Image (cartoon, each protein chain N blue to C red):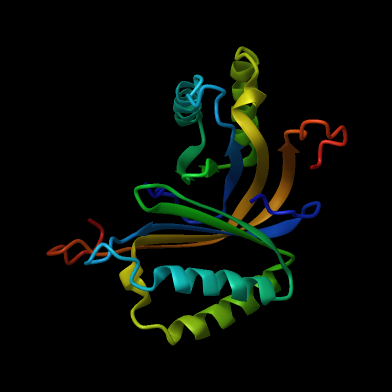
Amino acid sequence: MFANTPEPPYWAVIFSSQRTTGDGGGDDGYGDMAARMVQLAGEQPGFLGAESARDADGFGITVSYWASEQAIAAWKADAEHRLAQQQGFARWYAGLALRVAQVARAKVWQRPERGDAAGQG
Amino acid sequence: MFANTPEPPYWAVIFSSQRTTGDGGGDDGYGDMAARMVQLAGEQPGFLGAESARDADGFGITVSYWASEQAIAAWKADAEHRLAQQQGFARWYAGLALRVAQVARAKVWQRPERGDAAGQG
């Protein structure tokens, strides 16, 4: 679930969103779209990984990591092209925030697995 | 739930974590600690806001926003001092990632409230 990012500097796209609840309480195609967007990101040059969480109230944060601003720009152009083919992207969301940031410093810690002295299990 | 951040540039602390499940399945004081950390951040000079989500599997992302690197450093020193008074901080987590990044660009969109022409309800 943690992105296996290299030493900084690299770039992050922080995408925060509040999901709408479908009129029928259903998913309304959101899951398919979100899975496709993740798949497309993974196929882009310069994609380093992503982390994502969404709580029970429908507020979610996805952070994707990129080697360069150019990689983000190329992915943005591709994603917008794909999304333009979707009907009514905005219906899935009550609100969105998108922030592009350059990661300057990073620390990662994982609990050692039992019996794994290397601690990178 | 969205942080009301100013125009970039500003700074972001991206904190990703995987919660342990308490031995008894309980919270084990985690909620109190997390709430206290958020309160302390809010009292720090240069704190701009925060966004947070944790999914049903215990993977969470909290992004806090700051006016400067100096503000982050001051908060870090204070938080570490407070956490040093806690017993066994690591027990709450199976893994952590902490990234400090400078936000270069941001876009925010919120669905207009019904009957609210200004769209900032």
